[in-house]
Image: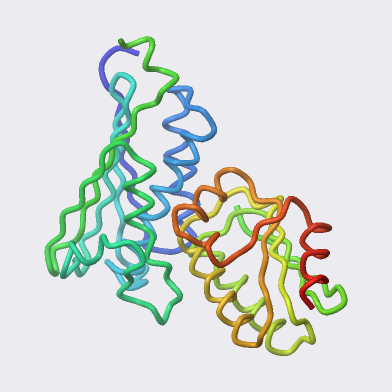
Length: 148
Length: 117
């Protein structure tokens, strides 16, 4: 493929849309011919970021919107998942494995750790009452040989 | 895509078979079904059978960890079996294997519990 290929997806902050979001991203990325493991990594990372936006960013308010932007360039896919919710007070703390701000909801506190481990690049920025933006990148190995 | 949870009582063991995708949206169903069965049922131990679980994220880890605590507080054991490579990685990353024993299939899981009961 020459140049880049992009898509943007906005949807209501409803938990039903978590599956929709990861399947939509997987369908978009399938043109890079990823392995099942790569596809699963991407789906899991999307699921984590979208779930965080719904539960933490918007506290399950379905009138709010989550946005995913995906971009394929060469052998890589970049994803940003953003919300305009309440933001994260202490990013350092939020990124600690097993930390959760909502222990009463049986959250495992592994969301950020999973995103960091499953993707090649991971960045999160957040502002109180200004929302949170997670930017991630993954290289699709099967495509590497073509671009080296 | 949704999730089906099939519960079966076998002697003093509750076998929970999960089929589909376990995420934040579907975690509640699993939580309620298992919570009720553990609290009201006569089973001592729980086997989580995950052969047909196609997807799981950290919300799944949360609900499993929650049930583990519940079973443990009643003096029982919880084990998992038939874990696919994706779910295996999540368990490994989160350290869940330090508290949950893994078995190849339900039969092995049952015999491991019968030894301890």
